[in-house]
Length: 143
Image 1: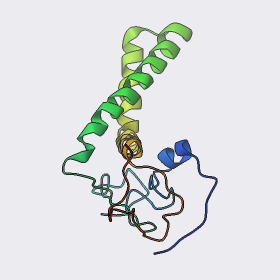
Image 2: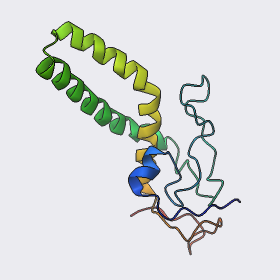
Image 3: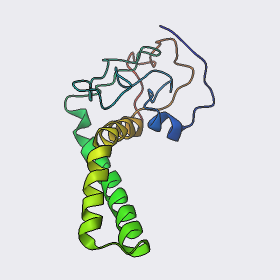
């Protein structure tokens, strides 16, 4: 297991940079480019730095669809207010811009929502960078 010290990574930076929620160092996805075909959702089984499993239970990431929906609504509202309210564009122009923006950001939103979802359930433990586990023999989830 490799270990690079980065004690300054915040929760938001860990989510956006798609890092392990437990050590905030290991990558959540095998491929860093979300637009690479065939590698969009490819994740290692566990963190290469601390050993935290990324598949906490079967179908764990179905819940990330709710997070993705929230991000999509936020983008929709922002684009609508900017296009229709501020710039005075017609409704169909705003719809076209919105469709283009959401299609372009789809892979990024997919990964960001998965990263946010796992960060909701796994506690940050900076001392667990060596692959050690909690007292009960399993990685410690948030409760």
